[in-house]
Amino acid sequence: MELKNSNIKIKSKNLNVYYGNKQALHNINLEINNKEVTALIGPSGCGKSTFIRCINRMNDTIDICRVDGSIEIDGKEVNDKNVDVVTLREKIGMVFQKPNPFPKSIYDNIAYGPTIHGIGEKKDEMDKIVETSLKKAALWDEVKDRLNEPGTGLSGGQQQRLCIARALSVNPEVILMDEPCSALDPIATAKIEELIDDLKKSYTIVIVTHSMAQAVRVSQKTGFFHLGKIIEVDTTEKIFKNPANKMTQDYITGRFG
Amino acid sequence: MSDTGHTVKSYAEEMQSLNDDLIKMGSLTESQLADAMEAVIKLDKESVDKIVQNDSKINALRAAIDNQITTVLVKRAPMAVDLRITISTMKISHDLERIGDLAKSVAKKVTPLPIDLPDELVNSLRRLGDLVQKQLKDVLDAYLNNSKDKAIEIWRKDEQVDDLTNLAMNEVANYLQKDKKNLEMATHLLFVTKNIERAGDHITNIAESLYYLIEGEYLEGARPKGKPIDS
Ligand SMILES: Nc1ncnc2c1ncn2[C@@H]1O[C@H](COP(=O)(O)OP(=O)(O)OP(=O)(O)O)[C@@H](O)[C@H]1O
Ligand SMILES: [Mg+2]
Image (cartoon, rainbow over all chains, first blue to last red; front, side, top):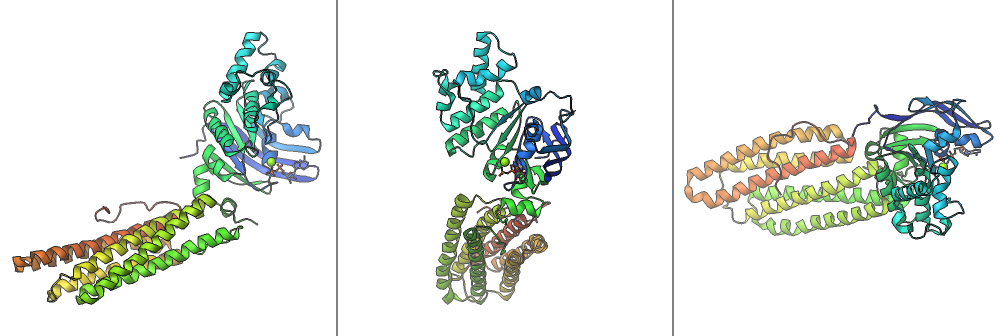
């Protein structure tokens, strides 16, 4: 498999991130392909979460965090002062390590996003959005008869799919996932992975994972971070069968530290 | 290849033990092939039983390696170089086992052979056998030294094995032409020749596996002349 470079959705150029005086990312240059899954791997604290938070400007919410350099989505600068962060985050959904449904009904968890964006004002329109979002997240069959029950009453794996459905409800283009399966059992994990495979037909996905096997299963491209630097990016196949860089090899084969 | 250094010590030990068993298997196979060739050249019928019995040691090691590999696969989900070591060790051990089988078959053919075979015939078998033994020794050395250049060299040299096989076959044909009553013996000798050649093909396979282990890529280009391995 060759890298397709013609099809770049997200591109970071000389991206540097600081928390106070401490630099967390150094000159990150990374290209993320459209409608593909890119996995980011690396030891704890190497800056994976910091990097994906740059994509939807979540680092803005951290006072001491400063970002310089460039991140483009479809060729448009994300860090531009004129960018409306609310619209940006609508376009870029995010799923976290711990499922975090709102303490509301399953239905309202999905309806929340569209409502604040002024979509689906008519009841039957919103019903449709809720149904399609839950179907896309492969959760509909399990919850269709209990839409008014609280989202927090679902199992961990179901909650995570609810969070994915919530992200999908506002028609994003990119979905960022930060260790989405680390709190889930193997079956729930398999369901999410299958879902990721399906979603990549319509969305660009960036997933941070500590499971090498998961990176191999779900992604087409993998980037290895170490101490705030990107060490190697290549097709997932190349990275896990025959990485070019010794550090990458040492990390994925468990020869670190 | 003692490429350890895993953070998890038991993982390093498992990989080391695979390596050790493969080396053990290699040297057993080497001496089996040497003994079988010696039996043919000297038409030494006494040694056949021992060679046949010893083959089970090689089979047992192959089974042990398979077993360890299964464990490593489920326990460690090896990646990159570890994955390549695991896969290549599995393939190499299977090729060694087949070479062991072929040595055994060669030895078994010694029993019915007459002790007065023509010198030309014996000599041509010796030359073929010497080359194949040298190839086996070289490929095992290349494995120990992690040498991809040696692997390529051995891979290319299989052509010479094919040439010597053809010469040996011609000698068998001459033997048959001298007296049609030699037909049964000639058939045995054809099997012996073919089996030595096939051992050579398995050595070529080992060279390919070794190259993949080291480089992470398959040996490109035309395979040396010779028939694909059908067993
Ligand atoms: N809010 C914060 N304030 C100060 N420093 C931070 C903050 N968030 C992250 N850092 C620091 O930035 C570096 C990168 O952290 P980040 O969370 O991006 O790592 P990570 O690769 O996601 O790690 P993990 O695999 O443990 O989630 C670390 O040294 C971390 O301590
Ligand atoms: Mg993180």
